[in-house]
Structures are given as structure tokens and as C-alpha cells.
Image (cartoon, rainbow, N blue to C red):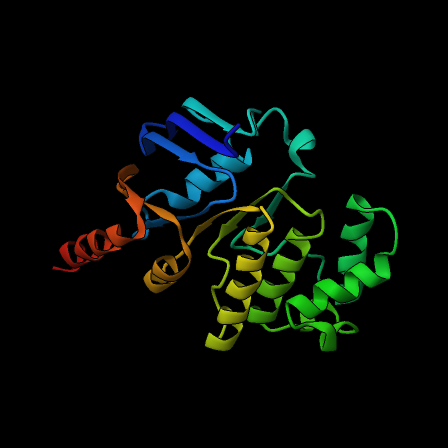
Amino acid sequence: MDPVTCAGLRFAYGASPVVCEVDLTVRESEMFALLGTNGAGKTTVMELVLGHRRPSGGTVRLFGRDPFRDRRRLASEVGVVLQDSGCALDLTVAETIRLWLRLYRRGEVARAAAGLLADVDLEHRAALRVRQLSGGERRRLDLAVALCGRPRLLLLDEPTSGLDPQARERTWDLLRDRRREGTTIVFTTHYLEEAEQTADRIAIMDRGRVALTGPVDLAASFRRIIEERIG
């Protein structure tokens, strides 16, 4: 069963449509990028896929389940990085990771926490409180939290926003490793080169609709859309 399917997906704020008849399928162990200009609707699609909003019409399914009704059942299978961090600011980095690990895993929490912090290059920040981290460090902590449950599916909204080039590359190396292990990854990004270098397929959103879906060489079409907006 495909990790993500959307059929005729719609969402509106009152009389204002934001997502219009979106059809998407993400295959198992695929790296899938959702591109679009600001206001194209990609973040709203991610929120619908996560079950944070109820669709105005159409359907969305994660592993065949409705994410709005079955969020608890899907919690252990889906890791999430949103644009805004949900980590408690007064906890330390180590406390944050250990808290999430206790929710998902049995066994040696301390060892697993050390491994995750090393993966995102935050082991030297373990004793700091989350509020003391830079924006880029919080982004990396968000990713570590998303990986705590060994998810089958990762949904990442602008996962490298605020990261320096070195941290961005390390983040993508980590995600490539997870994908090779069988994790399906869906992400939005404003960095076109990230999609070209990492994705198996892309979907280009424009004004609430999926304008194109296909291999990464369609990224040139996204450039044209941007140029038309600027021009």
C-alpha cells in the first residue's frame, strides 16, 4: 500500500480555495519533493496529509488510513518536521530527545539519544536548553525528534530552512541514509537545487493545484513559473 495518496483533495478558508483537486501518490521508499511559490498551497497540503486539517473535499490516506481520524494509530509510523518547532523551550536538548524516545522505544534510551544527537551534530549541545539554540540548531533538533520512532514515513516542511550549507548537506546525507533503509520521505523546499539533487520525483504546485508531477528534470518548469511571476 502506498505511503501517501491524495485524490481530489480540496481545502478552503470560507469561500477562498487554497487547495484545488490535488491528486498525488508517493511510493514506498521514495524521496518526493513538493515545490511551489509562496502561497501555492504546499504547506496546506502537508497539513492535510498530517491530519492537522480536515479536507473540504476529496481524500488523503497514509498507508491506507485517514490521518485526521487515525492520528494516534499513525503516530509511531510517521515522523514530522513542521516550519515551527514544537519542542519545549525549557527542556535541555538531551531531555527533549529522551522524552520522545521514551514515547516510542523500549531499551537503552541514553544510547539511542546519543546516536540521534550525533546524527544531527548536536551532541555538544546536549546540556543546553532548547531556548539557547540557534534557529538552525533547533531545526536539526526537530529532525532528531522526528526520527525517534524509526518512522516508515517522514513528512518535512522546509527541513533545511535556516541551516548553513554544511549543515544542509549533512542533513541530506542523513535523510539519504534513512531512505536507503526504506523510509519514505516527502518534503517541501524553496531550494530548487535540493529537489534536483535529492528527489526521485517532484510535484510542482501553482495557485492551489498540482501543475506538474514527474521526474526531477521537471524542475526547469518550476523555474519558468517563478520567472513568469517575477516578470
